[in-house]
Structures are given as C-alpha cells and as structure tokens.
Length: 493
Image 1 (cartoon, one colour):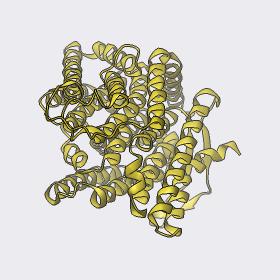
Image 2: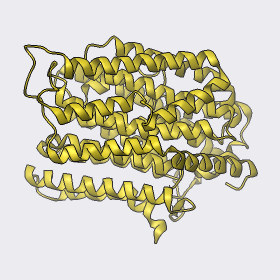
Image 3: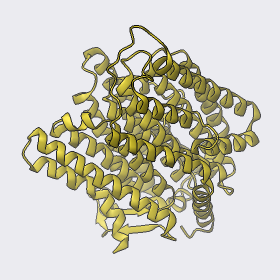
Image 4: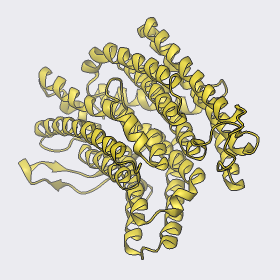
C-alpha cells in the first residue's frame, strides 16, 4: 500500500479541483474549500517528503499498466516515484504553497472558483512533474503547470492591459520554445526505444543513439530546462511574468515552478554525461554572468518587487552554476547535492518574501514602528535570502562556490561578487521600507496576524534548522546522486 503514496500525491490536487467544480460557486464555500484543500495538499506533500528522507530506505515507486499509443505502436507505462531529489523538490513545493496560505490568506479567500482551480492546476503540474518516473507523464505535467500559470496570470494578474499582455506574450513565446524542444527530444528518444523508457532506463536508450542524435536530443531537453530555470540570457520572460502575476503566483513561480528547470537538469544528467561535460564550462560562464547581472539589476531597482525578482534570478543562476559544475564531477555528487539543497532553501525563503512583499510594496518607509511582526519576519527572511551564516542557504551556496572554484576561480569570483551585490540590494530595500523615517509614510500596511506570526516563527526556526543541521540533508542528497550515477554506470538503473 505504501507504494501508492506517489500516485496519491499526484492525483490529490485533481480531486480537490474536481470538488471545486462540482460544488456551488458561492464565494464563501469556494474559499473554505480552497483553504481546507490547500492545507490537506501541503501537509500531504510535507509529511510524505519527510517520510522519504528520514524513514524510507529506497525510493517509493508506483507503476501502472502498459498502455499502447496510437502513433508508431509506442508503449507507455504510467509511473510515479518518491525519493531522492524528488522528495526535496516536493518539500519545496509544500513550503512555497504554505507561505502563500500563511501570508496571503485574504487573496485566497476573496477569489472565486477559477482562482482556486488555476492554483491547483499549477500545483498539480509542478508536483506531478516532480513525481513522474515516466518521460511522457513528466512532459504532460510539465505542460500542465505552464497552462495553470498562463490562466492564473491572464485571469487574475495585473489589470493594466499593456503590462498583462506583455507578460502573457513573453511567457507564451518562451514557454512554447521550451515545450517544442522538449517534445522533439522526447520524440527522438521514444523512436529509438519504441516507447517511453522512463527516467530509469533513459541512459541505456541514449547510449544506442548516434553521437549527433545524442547532442541534438540533449540540446532539446537542455533548452527547455534552462528556459524554465531561467539561465541567463534565457530569462526574458521573467520580469514581465512576475510583474503581471498576482502575489500568490509570484511566490509559486519563484519558489516552486523555477525548480522544475533544475530538477530536469539533475534528472537528465546521467543519460547525457559526456555531452553535458562538454557544455559544463559555457553553462557555468553563463550562470556566473547571470548571478552578477541579477545582483547588479537588483541593486539598481527602486521597487521592492523588482529587487526580489532580480535577486531571485541571481540565486537561480547560482543553482545553475552548481548543476553545471556537477556535470564535470558527477561521481562526487557534492555540487549536485548542494544545488538540490539550495532549491529547497531558495524556494522556501523567496516564496515567503514575495508573499510578504504584497503586504508592504506600496507603503514607503517607517513600517517598523507600527508593524513589528511584519518587520521582524521580513528581516529574518532577508537575512536567510542573503545567506547569513546559520541559515540553510549559507551552507548550500558555500558548497557550490567551493566546487565551482575547482572548475574556474575567475567564474567563482564573478558569482561571489554577484551574490554580495544582491545582498546589498536586499538590505537596502529593507532599510527603505522599514527603517526610513518619512513624514509621508503610509500607516496602513497589512500587519501579520498572530496566527500568521506563529507560522512565521515556525518558518524562521525551519530555516535555522536547515542552516545548523545541513549534514542530514546533504548526505541524503549526495548518496542519492552517487547511487544514481553508480547504477547508471553499471546498467542496473
């Protein structure tokens, strides 16, 4: 029965969305169901992920019956797994969604049925992609998350028609490019195998392809995941999409959806080890440039929202740098484990910051005097985002920088300067919003309620725990990466 857990997690958001569609569309009823359904999903993800990390010795895998596709007689088998990097990614989704529910309850309660269905569609796509063990289902859920975000922005985003149109247009163009390249790559793999090999058998199938076919297939998958991350210079969709999104969508875009890119890179790495090793240095150079660019743009932004967007871009490119370094030394697993651990830390912290930003972005200065809980937690989240020693991001980023120095010290220095610049930008924004004494300061910012304050205290304790006890998580991830590499090399996986 325990093997049904991955299937349950993949189907749960669909069940909740069906209830939204089946029940009457009264706002009060939809809001109550939305909050209850969200917390059920969040707790299910969190508890299942912790079970996989600390209890289950092996990944939990559910496999369905063989299906026969119409085209070419391809065989498909639905399969979901929970363990390794997928468990960490699901915990990231849980913490990001929890931040939305804790700090933006008014937004969720005031929306109608379409808002909750769009949110659940996005979560179902992200969670299903993290759980999918078959490539066909990974693609379906990958696309589903994009559809959910598209309608979420289109229906409930910025009402400024020009900005909303720009956000949707850019998001659509970049999304379409990534979707088509991923679809072409999967089509090539299915043609060689006569069906869906799944992540587990992908290396064996790729080994049968010619060197040219392998490079083109790798390029298709790589393009899709780097757009999703996004890696510089494929970030053109990011600013417009984040600006045009409702606050809750921004939190999930940064906290969870962007992690699909890093997750895909880590999953495809064993199959394309040789090709990715050749691409590691150019990707590391682009990632280091992205870290620096994000930090500089964050420092030059006057808007708190834009500062958070560019700071998120900087840290996401650092994750890309860690993944690129892992292509060179896949056997050690240290850089890949640190990148996966930073996925967790970055997702939890940035989702909280974007949710809190919606409470104070329109209020200039002097918020500390009258909004103590909001000011205290925003400061804690800011310190976690800039990797203060004792916070989870510090260990993950330090490990990635140390591993990157083995590949290129100049690139490591560039990335380090970018991180310092971004840290200055975040602290400067905090000073402007909370400590600047302005006679015209707005006094009506939304203070955290006592329940939200207690949730904030729990989140801060979790970030400190991630910083003080990183060995448990890094060891788990490193063992998962090493085991995957070893089994792929021996042909057992």
